Length: 537
Image (tube, rainbow, N blue to C red):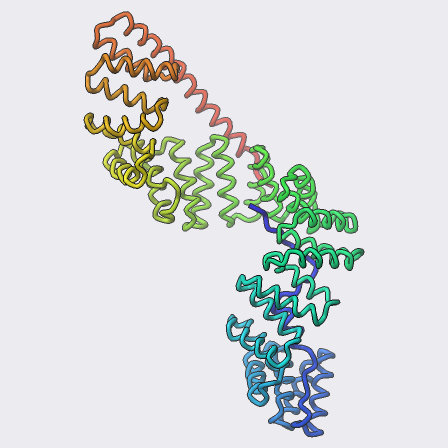
């Protein structure tokens, strides 16, 4: 999955930012309803507003309203002043009154639309801006605000159309061009987007901040090649800048140029080691390169800086899991679950780690919890059944396996497990059918062949058992228990020499298994000590 870039420091106008700028424009004046006194006070309010003398602007605005209470312009300017002061309710009332007095008063409609948008009343805000366009189809701010609102709604086709109309009116405004570019790729206007990107690159040629913003937008729209080229240019203009290095590194990561990405991100981390996200990205790169040691270190750095991020704990757990350090994986998956209890992926990961550790009852509980959170997890009922089988809960396992086979009649593993459970419960006649079906689907499946041979032993059909077991050993000579079962079959057939040969081979392989198990336990312990031995700084 692509990694999203962050930390842009050139101002890209957000819906509220651009609309606010529009709301601070000098208002329309409806001269027909303004007397001379009101006109003087309105002009004074505008001048004070432009000088940011808000107390004086409010005094003049209220005087203008008092002098001409039927004027939409006086109520609008007072609304703008009150809005600048953060007196939102009063501002809202003034804009609404201005529109009531003059429904075609564009400035008041635009200001009211902005306030509606800020209150989350998106549909009403859209209607207000559309009302502006009915009066003036070329109104730049209304098109911009509609483009921003449709972008927030995920309708990039409409969003791009409105930004494009705004650019037709004011083609030289780089802010409008950036706003259009930000949605044009997703609004299926690829050729126009590429053209605008080229124009902006030429315009921002020596403007490092402009180029940075352009590169960020391109990267967010998955135009990574061009973004990398621009970030690289900005890096030459502004060397050793954290935001530039970080975003360049992430863009390179998304192009699978991980070695280069790591170089820039490492420098970014040196410049500002307190940012958790940088270490997290370095951890992702190390993980992608199977560099478990560095991945663990970077994820631990990220957690040290942001211990409440569940995903950091989850990915650290994944590295421990890959290294076979089950205990560490379980701890980190548990941390992730505690931070985000509704995330099924975290529960599923802990279920797998518990299974690998041999904590089968706990594993079964985790698989059940994962299924409750997300019943659509692939093969979840089979996973639940397999954990129940390992925990010795054969009735539960059987119920789940029958459900799986009913839904997927050719599920080889489920059929095989049904046969295994039937054998363990002494239901030998019932074991025959699912095992036979599983072998028909996969004739060389060693575990199924082994259970099929073991079934013959259980049914005291020793001659058939020897044939089946020899086939198993032919496919996997090191399967210890197959030699033991063959020893039993030969013993029951009174073929003593063959029985002794198989018993000797069983003991030899069993000794090797015990040694391997001891070495594995020791290796896991040492591996865990290595992975967690150094505290994160």
